[in-house]
Image 1 (cartoon, rainbow, N blue to C red):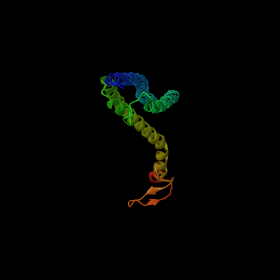
Image 2: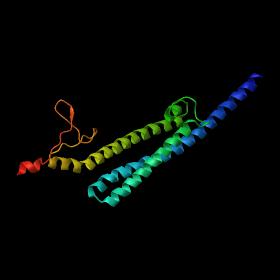
Image 3: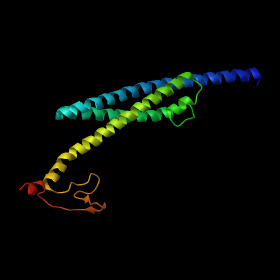
Length: 188
């Protein structure tokens, strides 16, 4: 082969790589658009959940819970789509994440998409934190009535993470003290 033929092949390979990169960037752009909508939907549901919880309207809370469940299902679908995108034939070889793959190129569009990935990652982390906090709050609120009954009856409430009926003494030893009356006995 001549040098000019090798040079022509090199240009074709570069153009093919650019076309593949452009195709992958378009797929990433579409994925990020969907991910942003899903993240914003989840944030909206979480934001609305608090006032609905405060009104104590069970029907509204049930509807919000169902919408939140659908948003979680959509997020799981996005995780599966991410895996497909990571192994796409047009994807750059280097990198263990979409943003790393985007940063492995010398393409300005890819780097902008990587910055968008980072912003969405922070938004998702915030949504995750809010959802976890909401779950923990709801869990403990659900346990509140039982704990009040234990307090009124003078029996130790079961530990949140321990066996039912067990509590800890000052030394941290688990005991299963039972009794009754408590506040009612002291009131008489």
